[in-house]
Image 1: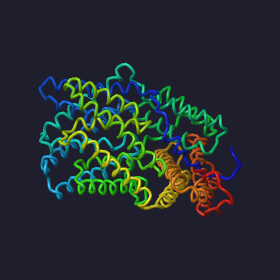
Image 2: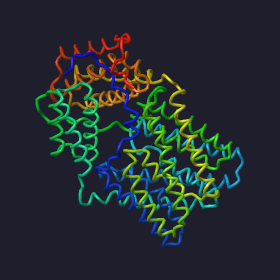
Image 3: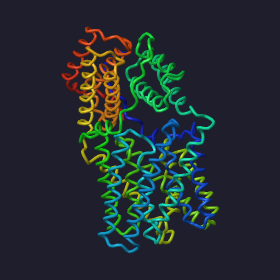
Image 4: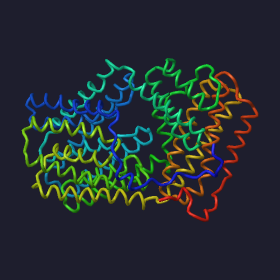
Length: 548
């Protein structure tokens, strides 16, 4: 344990973020599945006479990305739900594109921008409040944008929806197929990750700053084991032993936490006006409205492209440093992707050859989408453009796409700095207060309920969930405003400490024993004391939390 005053982490290096090397470790198998999920339906559709429309199967094949790392017992539901959402987006926005037509009025084009902004608002809020993580809501917006473009140029909404459905169906089959020969792969991977984090925590003398990564990976592993109905097997036993060691508890009866909260419960968590999910959705919606509106008024031809630029930067609510780097990645990736598009456009490949090329692009997207945005966008750009029906000459297309990308990125970065510029303070304070309330709830119930009781398991899970939310808000604050975070950090550290110590007390008590009254009273006093910790005076010299 360290004895110095708690300080926030330093801002990440912009140079390191910009030049981060993508990791393909563990990504090749899902990437190849992603390519196959497009190739099979596209070639089938081509053989059935759909000609170039066959490439639209890519819109549905994106569903595969959302089911990866999920146990097969629930993966089918994730793939099915995502596939239906992608098909619905293709159908609705395809119909909107047909209504808009190739020469739609400014008012109609603004309606389309508003519709894409509404899709952005709902999907960004949903993904962030449910904590679904990468690949985020971007592909849902991408499908809507491409459907509009195709149907504005005369494509049939029914054809777009059918091709998207074919891709989604193939994604479902391909995603589920590994379960035939490695049925427990996802839960093994999640558990091994949690075990490794726990061992690093113990090797580092239980360094407090590492508690978040241990808690996040452990909670994810228990959730995955619950999803797989494997909470009483060998994997659960190994996780349980490490969990006890992390909390300094003697190994007793197995006491696994409850699975992740229900969707309704998580939506309630994110319903605050200053929550991470609400702020992220608001910024993304404003940026898409501005970027799309300016694109329409400037007559650039693809307002959806400007909108997608903004969504890609803001979709998961990055802090200002990572958001700015993501914006640079978007611009660089677009330039690289346009170069690939220009080559493919000039070659004018036969449809069958084009399908093979797009399958390769799908593989490259899957390999890079979670590790390097610049490379991912390099492959997303030609894929999205080749699915559309361009009417402009190549040079005009490329110039317009660059301008629209710059518009989307500029408005995205501007909203991070100018829209609610200090909201991170309120977000962190609210998250810490929610964690305090959850901690008090556990301690109040602990006077009469043992840790393994149904009510205590729910309360413990909710406390863990709120602590993770608070740590996310704290990290954003440390990067957005290092000086303020440095002064506030002792208050946040006190909440984090008493919260995890409360969870540790539950594990040390064991499943069927009440937490001692003295321990509960001490923890309750610490919860109360954490509310009185004010901002510390600014340091006389540059503190660790202020590193740029």
